Length: 388
Image (cartoon, rainbow, N blue to C red; front, side, top):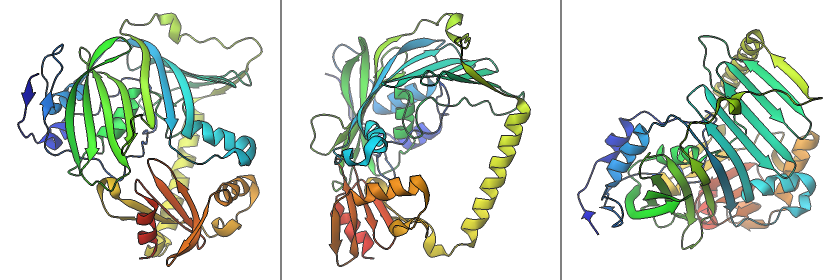
């Protein structure tokens, strides 16, 4: 097996390449990989079946990858080792599906303006189809469709079919992991892998700080196209991934045009949004954002979220809004949120008291005085931060 032991400054290599976006642009996928991942010394290796390639070279490959088209099936699975939320009724079941279960999506891509994602669920299917300036979103559960014509000369990002924070594809998951590179991570290669019947190289991102609950993040990169085929996140000491996003099947043949031509099914309730509607919505969103920014600026500095520590073991400390702390919120959503907190184990110490959510990849502490602390660390680290 060939092995390259040279040290490489991959931070500069990575940051010099624009982020790759080959599918439906959506909100950044957030994997719980701490406040920052990083890259330091890189050792390169390769399986005898593939030419040796260093980690730095693979990062450049991923950022420069281009394909004319592809289609395939993506499966996302998660088992974060969290307690059962069955006591919360249907709302709890919905939350549980995102953190302990499996989600499947079909994807088609034929260029920046031709893309489709179909998120398949037990209660139905949600499709987002981009065909030029036309964007459709269809939900089978209520047979409803929304049609948007993207305005000329404006940002033409397409909505995502997946819930916010849930990656639709391995590319989105890989972007979330790689974008966090900084000096608190070691990056290595492990040789070759096989994903969806294709040869791939594997990159491994691991925290240098051993107190992180995360053991490593593994990315399988297609040997020919350099497209990420699989991303896995492992808890420390675990043999099986806590989060896995992978192609189950993939083809790099350009899909037929009919895949992007959508006609609402019979009886569908269709809502049409014009460029004027989008402009109005954008204006309202901008106004709300401005008002929120002013409100944040008017708050005391102590009310702003802070970060304790750095890298993979950093802890986010935030203060809950006054009307949501200790059950003071109003409405169904507040009641559900409070029900979730009450279902968690009660903990206390010299720092005070509260409720703890402890999983294999992260811990979260909600104190009775209205603070939230979360990080990829053991609960004891949260208690230390709460006492400061």
